[in-house]
View 1: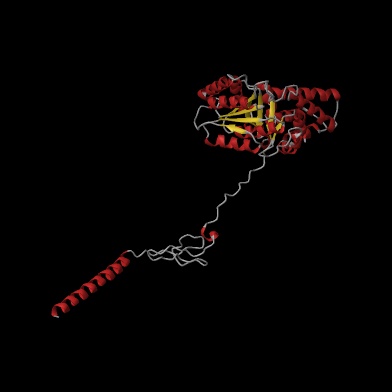
View 2 (view 1 turned 90 degrees about the vertical axis):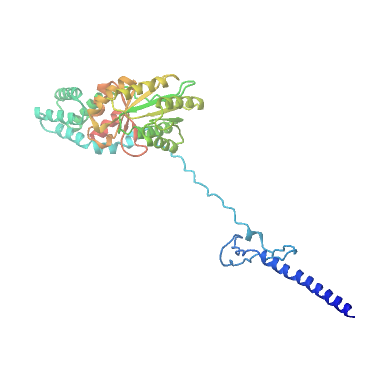
Length: 402
């Protein structure tokens, strides 16, 4: 009996030990693999890191061996909305004012700046007696307006002789005589046509040159508008590679009227840019290639030689149709010295006088043409985009005399 009792106790002890071994390790394992705390979802399905957003529930932690069953959540609550890039407004192209009659529309602006010259001359001619002092005043007024010594002498002598022959004292007739003499001095017979019509397989090439500060790049941009207004297709060449903002400025002007700009690296070879501009213009079949060059002083021999090189490189494609020299009208006679050097190096075919509305020295038009033998083809009469006008001697004198 005793042996049977001991065997029964041993069996019970073994059974209890086995049961304890099965229960306690399972609890220990459950503690070791407890999942980390999961932050609640925000209303777009992302982790908010804080309180549960309204309309969402935290994910359920499933016990081991049980299939993962998620609560029913609508798809829109879990998928963030697609971000659509805003549509950029493409600016409409400018429509430049037609050049026909533009000078007449701007005559009031010119008349305001030339009032002192016109009124001074007419007031002297309206006197009852034109003595020697009166003619000296007329001569002084013309010289002050930068007409130049030789043209002034010719105008005064012819006007004096015609007045004496006609014996007139009528202000209207005297004004008419003065206007005729001024128009004659402006040489209306000169050809002021801009040669911008392409040949059979080559675009017209217009080269723009000048010293620093004359408004050359701005003039190129305005000239592009003039050509577009006259029905030309234009390609711009930013051959001013030394001034950082020049290419950007020219490109902005061109973009306003739908003209592309060919440009190179800052500090690069301007002749290479000009060559590429003409090449691309020929490939695209544009009417006119307009090339802006860096401003340079006429006394800098190296820079003037560079301009000559640029001209020779362009001419590998064919002849340059127009070389326009931009002059600042406010510099007066000082600009003539600069102009002479440029005409020798670049074979200038026309002059663009800028800032003519900001000076009372409108006579510079006469002296420039006389000294250079080159016609003034365009004049700048303001800061507006369409304030560049083809020069017309009759309308200019009419505005000059008011």
